[in-house]
Length: 345
Image (cartoon, rainbow, N blue to C red; front, side):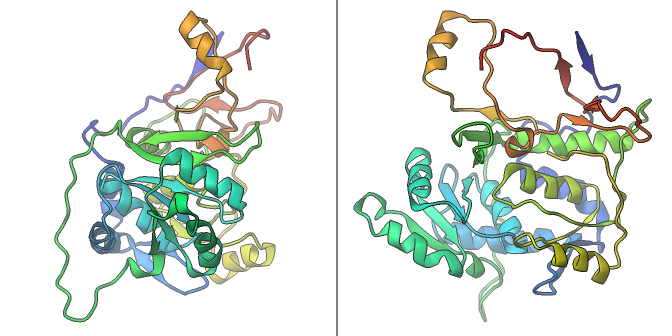
């Protein structure tokens, strides 16, 4: 038995569109409305600011050797600069590997080797930890790029030219590592298309009438999240909010007083949303034991991933729902089926 959403998946751009270019087209209509607010630095960026600032970040990354196919790891906390850097880097065709700042040196070493990392974008507070690792002969060729140096122009520095890269939607944009909830951390590849999928799902639920309307945030609302941006669900959720014209208040490390305080100082309204906000993704790594199953023509192959850690937006609870036992309705583009009890996991 299978069920699908009664809302069609719309707004999906052509396969030639990179995530960043499609995203900028989606948000252009929001103009002077605030897109991002950092309660710590007091910085506020409007939607119309993003295009020019991304040109600056893209230029500085390109000057440091970032180009199509370059693998760039990040060791950063949540910030406006981190969001801008990710958007600029993947628009150059780079592949971003977000790392948890709390990761051990052993875990970081694994990520750098598995993904063949060439550069690390880092914040000052994490520099001593990474420098210790990069002193090893294996990682001597990896260069460090300070995150805080990627924005702005020096005095008399010319306005950077707009750098265009020939990209296809199926090319890799991010490699996230799962948090280990469902087993050892696994690499999860997101192409430009799979990053765009949840944005189009969210826009579809807003634009199309449905028998089962799903809660949605209105443009002008302000949202303060709780998830880290090195986490697929956390970063993709931010883009889902922005594409709806919502103002995102940057959340740093979880602090319940800051969480409530941000809502108060921004004069936001807190509403209870029965909604999950994470994407459709490609899995590029599996256990060796599955290789034989793939080659032998086995009909059922399941690899367990947490929905939010993989960044998947699959179900949402409709407004007015009274059946608390229900997982909700499938999101646009999702077909949900009851799995056999004899599946291989």
